[in-house]
Length: 55
Image (tube, rainbow, N blue to C red; front, side, top):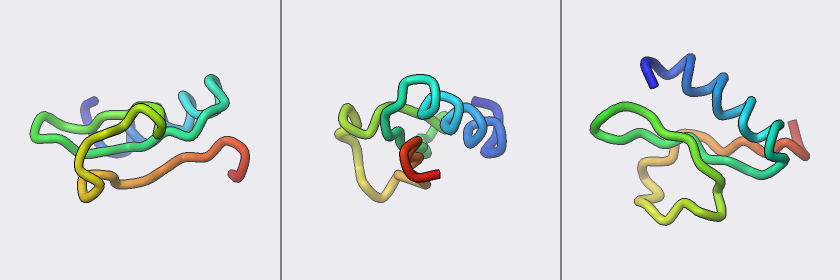
């Protein structure tokens, strides 16, 4: 993803679409978004968690 703002919008959209909690994390190549249950990376890389049930 190009920048943090775009990553944040995509993370919230994904959380609402899938109705699952997702995490926004930073990598050496930029930002990533994935369901929280599937994330097994470094917890220090997580920037935010999006919960569609608790906006």
